[in-house]
Length: 401
Image 1: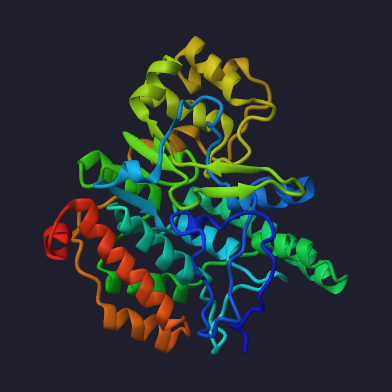
Image 2: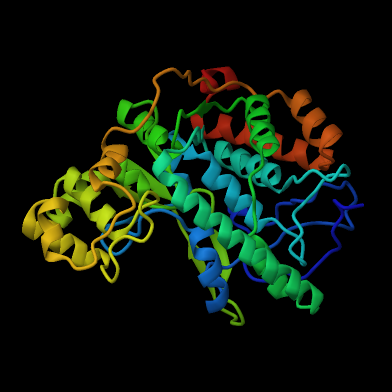
């Protein structure tokens, strides 16, 4: 059966979505002789990194400029977090795979890697008293078409290398290339929304960029943080965002008996602006100079620190352009700036946390998608018990209300 995976050695690192329960199970089948608990490293082979960097790690590269504060997931107990759903689902699709790169599937051939990651990771977060809100992308801005085509080409290239590695019997290499071929199909998003509804976890449909909507929720005070792996949340004006919510955990470095921890990191917009000595609008200009999803190439040869220096020296992107050679943009940079400063968002949403529909979850995950009922029920029990313990309530209604 396609959903059964033979027991295999742990290959690289503890899977991100098992951070709370490192021995968590992620196979669909019920028999204890089969499991899926893969580990992935963020230190890829140099060739693989060139192929996947534009797929798995997207957005503006502000890493060198942004002060971050490491925390523990437990520190977020009692807080609500608006999570970029597509960002998380792509991570799950990339990570949760068989040794040859094949994603987890049910007996009908439907991919279920995203459901595995979403269910177990979300239940772990709720167990810690964290209130997740998933935000789904809508229609992308027209200016994102260049980046979308670029990603499609990267996936096509990775698929060719994946098939070649399989043909040559290089399973580990094939598995890594396969991670860059992930496609989020419509039924995957629909299944994810259905599962979240059954779990009593709210989700919001964004009119356009999910990160922009998540930032909007945080600015309005409807969430305490927004969460994503890249730094675009800052350009959308999120006052607080956290990285590594869906990819934290202990990992083993490739070919070394050394383990490191990937921990959540909190970033505060006010602190970023203060330490960089710029305004929010100027931060957006720095991002545009470096390169965003709407002008992915940025200015050739211009790094984050140089871009920051130019904006501080001249005051704005327009004022800095005369001092730059080869400053080309796929569109008027003012239009790119407008996407960040005034993104398409909606106030038409309702955020309610409810008790999980245990019977509905078991029917959907186990009856329809072939997950192990024992493991699903155990995860739900921990989720409910953890929520009660963290919040000190006697009933879930008091916590989910």
